Length: 358
Image (cartoon, rainbow, N blue to C red; front, side):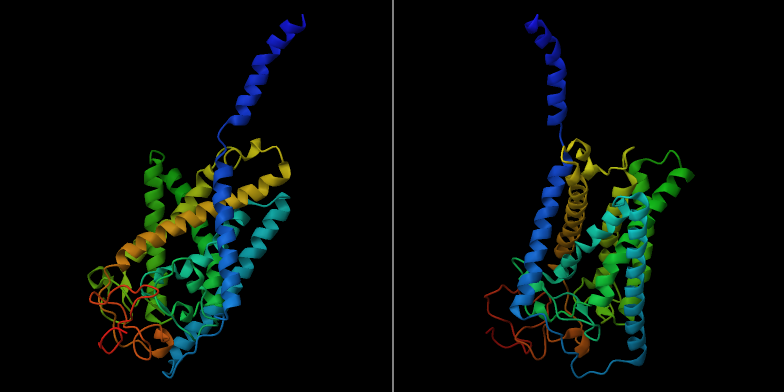
């Protein structure tokens, strides 16, 4: 009798065991997220300990009054917008009595900020205006960093740091909204069409914002392929491929919110409800979204580096508050161009005057 009962219970036990063994993508994505969190903590601590966390001097060239107005205005507005977004997602989470998905989205965007200066990983191809509030950059603490004088990049903490609190999440939410409206307007539009529609809107948004910021000298794309840039060869040149690649990051994060199941779980959170330790479910979800965001951002950076390898000659008329002695006059390194070899950490430097490498 006992044996018969055991046999009757066996299928149920096997089904329970099989359920527990089902794939849980959240664990893999959370592991990736944990690695990226640990990496950026190491980078920030190493940067502070190195003594490189100091303000980058502006140099001798004067800043125009118009640029100063734009610069200070955007710093104030960016910080204010960041505070507003944080207040909104905190209130949202309190209302839901749990960490909302939008709060996780904001957290993930903040957790990719460490990748912001990777655009200069191989060659110095990007300048920030050193009149921004800054304490240099952590670039040289990123494993494998190649371009010289990376610590002098004046990472604008108040302006760009705040953008990762509001513009990144805001653009992602706009992507979500565009996809939802497009689905209502064109019910037969497939997933690829929805994503493509949202991406096109994000391309327009990126062009609007970046062309303003480049023309007002808040930053500069110093190294571009001139034939694939607006105003190629001039100091306010803008690479068209940036407006193609960066909106993909916004779109990917918006699609993560849009394509959720009936429980509100994104693709990287699937399986979290089968995690037995309930208290770990929210941290795992946050880490999974952080992992996805960092992979998406790293994909953008790698794609951009493929273009950096083919940069044309850098314009020679950048003021000191943009060039910041990262290359060119006053340094050991010539600014990048097709005839300038890619610098390695211990290779001889090609001096700006065209003399022999030293």
